[in-house]
Image (cartoon, rainbow, N blue to C red; front, top):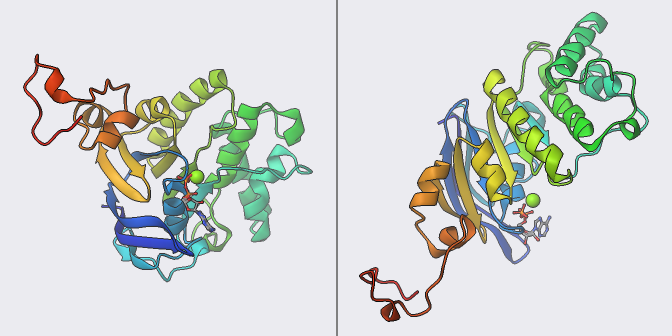
Length: 267
Ligand code: ADP
Ligand code: MG
């Protein structure tokens, strides 16, 4: 497993946001973290990124326990839920920001920034400001910026890409039609780059379409993990069945004689 969470617990005051969270992600996979608002998805991402410390348990990346490794040295690209571009900077400068902070060689920065802008399909828009872009284009700038290496890693290699890409509801603020386009674009791009990625969403259609595997969160717990079709066909809990599909609920199973009553089921 490339990214692994082992027995993670996290409380905010008296509220337990993560309850014994365990899962592993294989290298190069795109995982969808799917659950209702408040179920602990962002908390999980923040602990992987090192922006939050678990109360107990281990975060492992590439075989190494990283609990004590600072965020900047974990090799993680993070697209935040409420992404904010620098309003007074052009597309180019937004993408170049992390690289410039490091005072790296100008030519190398320029090459990397152009490469990233091309990757996200924004060639020709380098000089625009965020206010002159559509919602979808702004999101692409945010992606490109997240893909630029962390400043601290530049010493190792300027062209280095993050080892793990975390995307927290990246399309939440974007209208339905563009969202559709961005989903396939995201899947294709991540496939091409081969970066291990976690994509958070509360939209089941989005998770099904984008993710290789889905992890369902509920009240700080992991309810189930599996392929979209696997989870859909075999929900292990009532919660998963109700969240991942449009179930019909029969209040008293005894009233319904066509099927044998499922063992232990009261609904
Ligand atoms: P999600 O991303 O699934 O919507 P979060 O991980 O953001 O959920 O939050 C999980 C729970 O933890 C929520 O009930 C939220 O209010 C609470 N929470 C998150 N961050 C904090 C914080 N810094 N202080 C207190 N409570 C928090
Ligand atoms: Mg969240």
